[in-house]
Amino acid sequence: MVRLLQTARDGNVAMILVIGGLNGFIGSNTTEALVDLGQNCVVTRHENTDVPSFLQKHIDHRHVFIEPANSTSVADLRKIGQKHKIDGIVNVAGGFASGEGPLRGLKGYFDMLDATFQVAQEWKVKRVTFSSTGGMYLGLSGTVDEEHPIALQSKFPILAYQKIVEVAADQFAKKTGISAICVRLMGMFGPFDGAQLGLPARLVHAAVSGRPPSFEDVFFGNADDAVDLLYIKDMARAIALLQTAEKLQYNVYNVASGKVTPNRELVEVVKRVVPDFKVDLPPGHFPFPPLPLPDTKRLQADTGFSPKFDTQSAIQHYADWLKAGNSK
Image: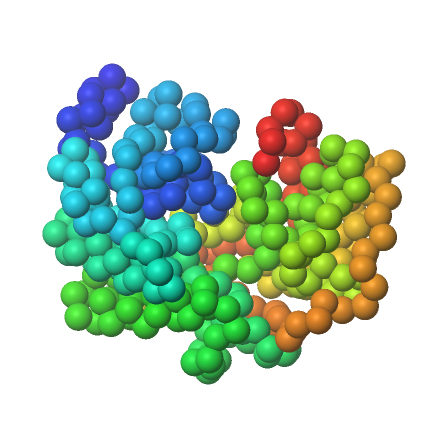
């Protein structure tokens, strides 16, 4: 073990670079999942210095190494490659921005892609994984797989940016021979969810804190809504399995539970976990185009993934995490 740690310090052990892997919601949990699969990781730290407690032990045991970097800067990423041997990249961060003005978001995504593609080639990595979103399917109904045509028009800038990422990753893989995949993520919730955009996070925080939940800016948070929900620990494990798979058949994967959870059922589960919790959801449906159920056959076939958490165990785990004194 001492020899392994010394080798890691010397930069000779291959590691996976996780952009946003220190304190991003998806990134931090994905880092934990990669370590659980036996990987060592380098994680980027930009402005936020928070460290989730579930990563601290891996940092202390030198399975996770922290490096300051702006993911839109190729110079910053190259510095990481000078210190560590990187053989894979997972970029599940978001909100990239460069410069000022109305195009700073768009330029941020272009700069992020350019920097990632440059170092991926220089380091000769095995695979690059980018996060995308199940929001691609907004307005569709039924069950949809990754082959379903996607409209070019986008209701929000982030959907447009994610489409650019998917197209760019596909072309990068074809031109370089380096595996590049995109994971379309659905209704996640769980530890270190700072944004709390989904109903599960709002309900669990409210139940644990004893304060009434806020439904402001919650997507699909009405009484008659039902969406695919996947606990973040399962989602992170799916991403880790895809990143470390020896061979993948496809370049886009839905990462979801494969089942719809009605909001009324979600409320009942939270009440079972925190019995004195009371809440009235906004009536009817969220005034938005529907989200279909993502097909997960690709993910299952190539990784053997299936969720370990059902709704009850996920809510219980999340509530226990918050009750232990964690703020998000």
